[in-house]
Length: 85
Image 1 (cartoon, rainbow, N blue to C red):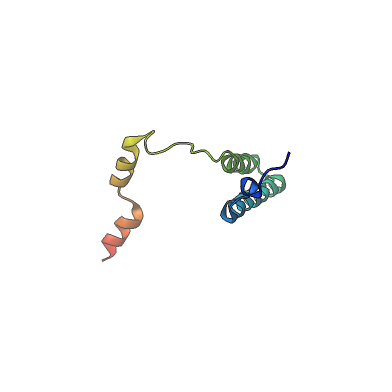
Image 2: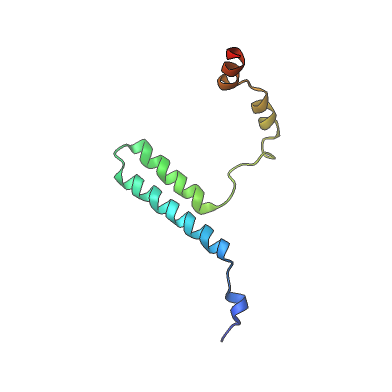
């Protein structure tokens, strides 16, 4: 059975995004294999898994108060700038 090319066509941006994801996963895998630290190997593997799943781990809707609390916290960077002026 043949299908029209329109059904098989993929947008170039989608192909480029997929290629970038695959490259990032390959880089993380290489770093994982070359790392001598067990904690780094775990971190690289988890990072690669996050890229592969493409799903949001959590969103602002999961923790509605989080963004407000984080925005209200002063940071050392901003405090240092204000004190220097």
